[in-house]
Image (cartoon, rainbow, N blue to C red; front, side, top):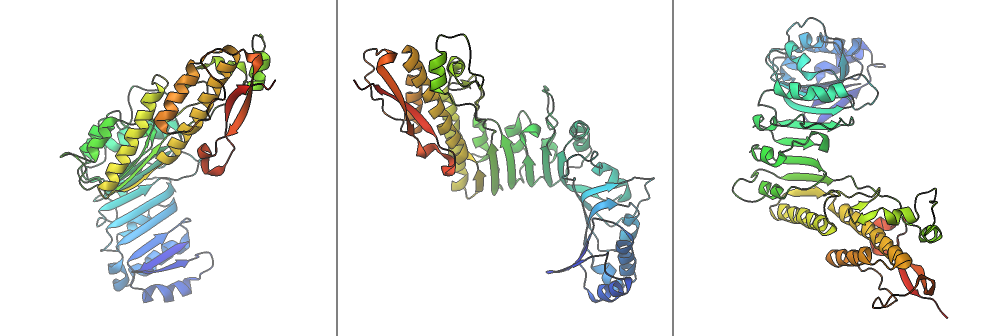
Length: 425
């Protein structure tokens, strides 16, 4: 597909069906300012370029050229015929590089977006394109890493970029092994011209707040965070804040939903040596050491070494960040509503395990801890229908379920809290 843009007008040309004769009649009639070529760089796009160079009006009007698909490096030779061309946008390209023959010396800006297809070979290094456009610098870099080699190449790649980089997007589908360093550690501060920065958690520097404070022109920031650094507020308030920031997107996560306790199974297995094959019986109660240590459950904004209340405080601090940003006229996007909903859902499960411990062994510490967290989170758990002042033997109790509609995300998936009452005589 080839696209011609003339101001607000854009015409898409299917080069498998359009004839050379038709191209010769269309192209000279357009006051061309932008050209898009791809995904297949066959004979028609090259013919189109050649025809355009024959018209002085056409060649002088072109300012931006976008190229995608299989790239022949000889295209830079033909782009040299357009004296007004300043920017070349490369996306989803693959190419076989040969001995560089410099072309298009008038081009000063390159934007590069890597392919988004998993299972392909490693992306073409954007640095390998620069010898073909000797006056250009990379001003926008958008990379998704699917391979270890791509991830490992990031430090060297960024180290060779100039401070003129304005847009940086890094995402990794490949999860590296644990390492004491990260690819962006100590590298971000050198890009003082950055206006947009988008990083997932894989690429987040250890001292990311301090690094971000060194980017005075930043106006668009997007991050994926596992936890929340209290120093993040320095980005939004105080004399050192990012004064040009106008868009902020923060995604916290991931949240992990584990198994829900089955009190029927737990009751049958109580005091027995065998466990439920599904793993949702007595062992779930035994594995519940605290709100943050519940087997395969996991929340963002903290870790298993934190107490439940510390985790709640982290959520409240993140929500304070969101309020401060909105009050500063920053367009904010977060998933904190979903994060809080996940807290509610995990709290119900924690409460249910507390009910299980209470029912089987009159061990009430998990139940009491769940009540304290519920009060902090303003979640109305069911009121026990028994008096805890005196112990009641399990055979005199029965448990039942109460639906918790307020913690069901968008009404999807029913959620129940357990409760206890005395058996009817």
